Length: 308
Image: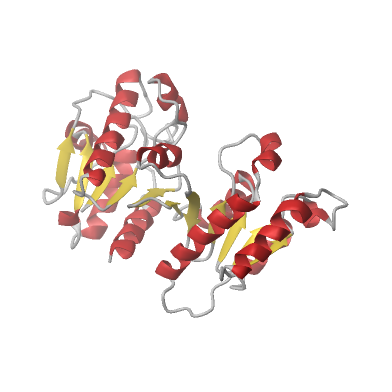
C-alpha cells in the first residue's frame, strides 16, 4: 500500500493528484490518500475533474479552504496528514509514502522545528544517514548538503558525509538500474574548477579527494571531484549514472533545467520508500487549474517500481 499525503490543501496538491490518478487505473487499490475528501471533491468540481471511487481516502479534516488562500487550519491539517502516514508506515500498513507539497512557512507557523519533509521523515524514523536525491530519466542528482546558507556549506563537509551519501546513492542506483553492470557516480567540486589544485579553495584537497579514495576502497564507484560547470554536461551524455552535488543549487539548477516538469524527489536511507513531486505548493497558479501532474505521475511510478 502506498500512502499519498495531500500536502497543503490550499496549494496545487489536490489538483495534481486528481489529474494523476486516471493514469493509474490498474493501481488505484494500492493507493491510500491521506487528506481531506471535502477538499478533493471541491477541487474536482472547480476544475471539472473526477475523483475515482476505487481509491481509498482517509479523511482527517473537513476544510472550507480556497486554492491560494493558505491558513493556519490548513497548515495544521497538512502536518496531520504526514504524521498519520508515518504512523501507518511504522505499523507496517503502508510501504511507501508519496508526499504532496507543504511549505516551510506553514511548518514554522504550527510550531514544527522542521523546514521540510526530508528532515522530518528522517527524524521520525530515527535515521541519521539519509540523502535528498532527485531522479529523472536523463539525470539523477544526490545532495551532499541540503537547506543550508551557502556560507555554511564548507563547514558542513566531511569525509564521512561524502561516504554516506555515496553509499546510499550507490544502493539506489543498483535498485533502479539492476541490469547495468558498471555504474558510475561523479562528485562535484565545491569551488570553481574544483579548487584548481588548491588555488581556488582547499576543500577538494582536504576532504573531497580523500573521501573519493576511501569510497573506491569500499567498492563504491565514485570519481571526482570534477568542476561542476562541465560535469552535468557529461552526465547528460551518459558518462555518469548519478551526480553528487555539494550544495543545493549546484545540483538543483541543472536538474530542474532538464526535469522541471517530471522530476522526482526521493529520500534515500529511510526504511520505507518516500517520493515526492519536484515542485512546491504553487499558490500563484492554484486557482487556475493549470498545474501539471507530470512530476507526481513520475513520483508514483517510481514508488511502484521500487516496491515491485
